[in-house]
Image 1 (cartoon, rainbow, N blue to C red):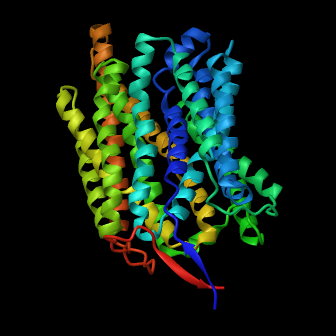
Image 2: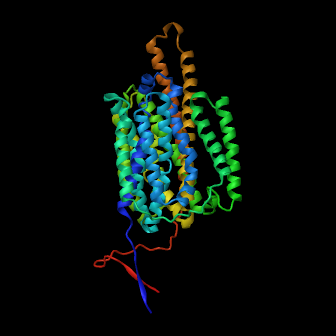
Image 3: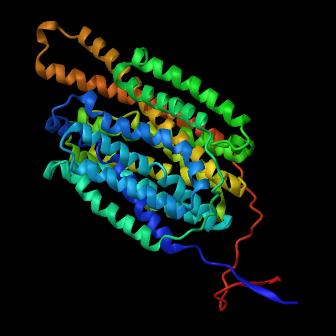
Length: 502
């Protein structure tokens, strides 16, 4: 009897580091422009509705392509896919950095989105196959550090650059980082995932996905400015909703679906999906409403506004890997209940912000909220993905990423709409109580600030109720039994080998 020696390889840390660099660059790029849009609007001589397409177009392309990421991950090796995605992202960054006009700049942003859209799902899949289930919490916590910290520091960095440099530096700064990531990917990346070169794409699914998710994202992104009754909002929403329903029906009847919805046959994945979607909607409320309060109600500059929000981003980044280790040890239930309870308390306190709330209080409450949220997303999502069989990993990550993209857009639109409606109503009430002859510019400004504050307070209260719903659902979370017990660290053995009969 002869035997072969099979060595259990360690996770590919070098390749993971390369993926992390690329993902960090692409995630950072997502939120860099938000603060810079007013300066870009003035420099490029376009109106607000036009300049907003730099954010809306990026979101649309990402939302359309993320559902197809499951097919791409199955069809190509992780090395091929990452190099291609990084090359496309680098090209888009160069186009944006040297764009002579708005049209080329917008095209560059959309090319960036095409490359960036696959980064999150790809990295998450590589993490799932590189680490055993009992170590995935820690690994996904590090992934969360990249996914959360990069976009969180974007507005602060952007505010500083816009105040002291030209907005083009936002792209010129990203470009060398993208080139370095691409070179490292070509040089150091390796394959850890099997590819199926015979996999085929169902093109009707792609068409339905594009119309469906594109229509929904476009509709909700325009709702904040145009209102939910505008034809430019209703028609895309209606077309998108019908297309998504047809897309789901088609996936359920295909032998090889583009997005395999059998993932929802697994109860903990489904529960994790629902909680994650609710949590994303609530998280975006804070990320949108808090800067509006700081800048418009309190009159603080964008740079200082970003600096006030930075501690929350730092705490969330620090907590992500810690939360991952706690998940490996204690499971998701205690973490998610604690995190959502903290988030709910902080959100309720934000709903009672006043015009004279101290800077320290604002920073503390926002940071507390981010601390609570850092304990929820990654543990919940990781627990849900752990329940899936290996062949459904790409589809599980694609489903989660698509849902969070759509939920983030819907959450933003809903909370902005609530804020605007309440602000208009409160403004009309305050003006009705004021003597018309006594309405000076100072009085108008004061009424606008009070009205906006009322809208922000009410929106945060709705977000508090949403948080409570997620908190109730968290009590039904169960740790997925992976069938693996944590492996005790060996004192002297560095490699584990097992003999496999020839």
